[in-house]
Image (cartoon, rainbow, N blue to C red; front, side):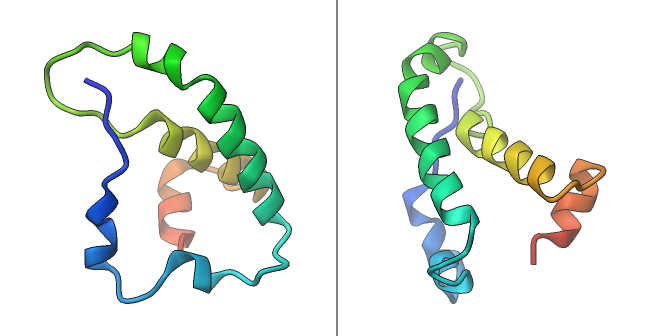
Length: 85
């Protein structure tokens, strides 16, 4: 089952993720491009997941994480999670 981004995740944060990055940060345009590309393939991603079962991590979130890992030349997913803050 394909997971979805939880709209209530802000309930657990005391800050806005958007406020942590400057408005002129070079990754902001990259994020817009990634969002539009992922929106374009969203229907295809839907077809790859079963209708029932346990929800997965949203593929959009995983692909964006891989994009950041490649952008910052991080060696592993674990190191990426450690460096998020």
